[in-house]
Length: 362
Image (cartoon, rainbow, N blue to C red; front, side, top):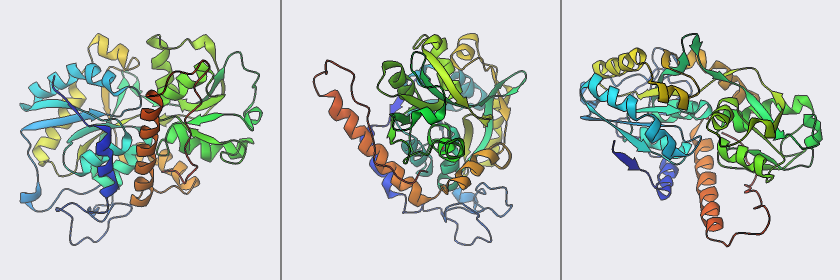
């Protein structure tokens, strides 16, 4: 399966979001939280399809990607059986578009280079509001769709027993747009006696897997992460469950959602939905994806309501200004990681990568 690599430098494109697509709607009675490029006349919280037939797209090749919450190269392999199915089901070639950040993924759909994508929980809202993404499915099994919890991880041999014990310690958040790795902790922790930025400095790791590995290595004292990512890392043998302790966990949130570009030809969009919902994961793919074996139908208005509630609680709107700020942070974090990788290895643990505290915001 062909893999198209989006280089880190392409993240700079994300900073150009102020330029609306050429297909922007000129007259719109209602758009809600959507960017000015889109309209929501039926008030379902997602972008309407263009009313002019000439603005509907019917690509010969369907471009797909999945959220880079872990090593992006993992998913290119894991989703290969599904892309083979999508090719046969739609009669159009389906390829994987490898991205290295949430911002790059959102921009790829906004610019028209991406047709179908699995977005992480928090960035799904950015994709909806800024890129015209239409969430329609989530992973699950025979019992229902998958959810996850925010878990605060510490090393099993650490002295920390409560969240309050983490005052003044090194706590890693994943990225500013992440629901489980940043926004939910900011919404929940103050009521539990631990205030991000005030009781501890927020250190952005750049991903859930990096946060888990950082706690495991002792680079961070603790980290709030998505339980499903941690569970998959344990299942793959990347870390040992017995090396960790969970100090706190949240109520369930929806996991990553699969979305279509809003301007696909309606017949093609419906066919893609059908191809997703009828598919059953092969055994290896199900193991790789946490035991999930199918896609369940979902809507942004219903399944992402608790995510929007968290964003409202911490005054973190899913708008262009917040997205541009996050894009800059991701560029800076990537530059720091490249610089660190070129330095000689230190005899002790590498110091955690930090980022200047900023208003967050999936």
